[in-house]
Image (cartoon, rainbow, N blue to C red; front, side, top):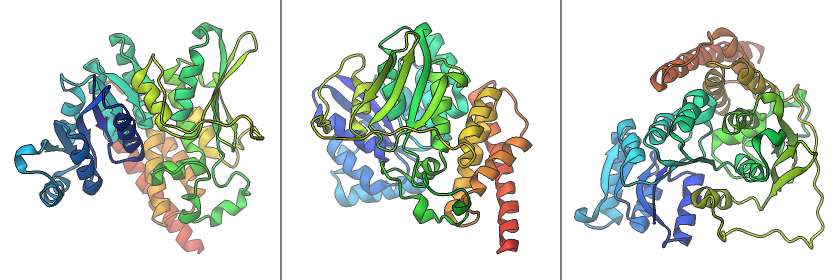
Length: 398
């Protein structure tokens, strides 16, 4: 029996993870659930999976959870241990009776807990991009030093992980990550100035949270995936290519030095990569649709437009630069996306805000997670200032 802590249990990855657990009750047991403020969904998860402990974001969410349990749940004597805040999240991720931590908290909020779980030698299923985008050097140093299994859950990196099993690392010539191209793949660069948040939130393939959906529309999400791939597979950015593949059937391809290309292909269902991470190195039947190879289909591939999708190029440059550049990139993007969704800046100003923040923020090497989080906060302050300047300039022109 594998005992799990799920960081981000009420998000889309957390919900899919619990469905995999539901399908395999003889193999997996939920020990701790960590969520934000969605107490209604969390209460349903508590009633079904009966964890030992539950952690929420803050005291307000904790009070709301208690009220919800009183209304819907069992008697107080049957409640799990209820906690709130960052320290409790770390405790849930490092508990002695936990074998596997599924890291799916959005943003740098999940960074410290994941890092501490690695230090505690837990197996990690990683679905939180910011862990490696912001803290790749520190995190992967710990992974290597402690010989911890860190299995990517994102469909592209999970696919790449499967492909890499077909050869030795020194036989790899490049990794190809596929991108759907988002909702504006065929939209002109000039037309992006009139894009609304509602339009940007209509992803053609995946149903995701607001920030990652906007990041997909700008292709920043793919830039983050390039950075992740460099850390996960010990590759320079020059060996990680992005190709636009709107059908989203091929998730990743690895090219070897003999010219062979190994591709990972599956239905667009996150339960497959989640189960792969949970059962690695084994495979078992997953509750996902199978591809029907008797159906005719067309797969297309093209190069991304780095002029229109400037953020993808900035991600490559930040990874090449090293230091805290990718931490700054992530922090500035989060602030810029929030500003766009709030109607304060136009769509192309997301990239402008990120680039200007990178130009203003002094690049340095983080020596600890706390130092890294300080750098993150500084980048956010700079990004907010840039947003205010962009908002004022846009208001003058309107």
